[in-house]
Length: 232
Image 1 (cartoon, rainbow, N blue to C red):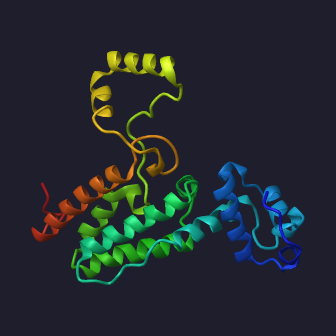
Image 2 (cartoon, rainbow, N blue to C red):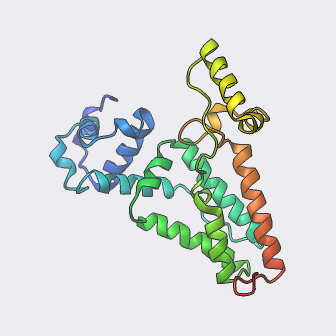
């Protein structure tokens, strides 16, 4: 817990202060370290004081998700829709790298928050302003999937958490049982500090590679006048 100066403790609470303190606590302690009790302690108040500003833990999580989504860059309004979409999605990824817990919170929201809806509306608007049809934009958003939020769902298994001889033995066993998975897993090295929300392959290069493949494909369909009604 970060000691709170007396002046900060005396500052009246409001919803924004509560949510921003929760974001800071999650950044410092992880999302599992965030509770109404720990947040109240951080703010120097009794837990009941928080319920005047957030009704429960779910509303708190909705609020901090919106704080992070608010850090996603707005569309730049240029003449290149593909560059604008790419920049906005990479800005979303940058926000999640600053707040590694946020991907998990965004994934678990049962309803889209106002900030999330505004972000999706703006992103869809960028496609539409670029001349893409509503039909192609609909399918493009599905294809992009969780990438619009700055992360991707893990596909391949994470490396064994054990180290040394145990790790080598586990890798050899995997290679013997699943040689093709082992082959591609060994084909490229990934940097640990680029992964959003934990271990795995979701590093910056991998993320941008997949994003560019998708956007290039969407651009080709747009240029060809593609429609789901005529696709066969």
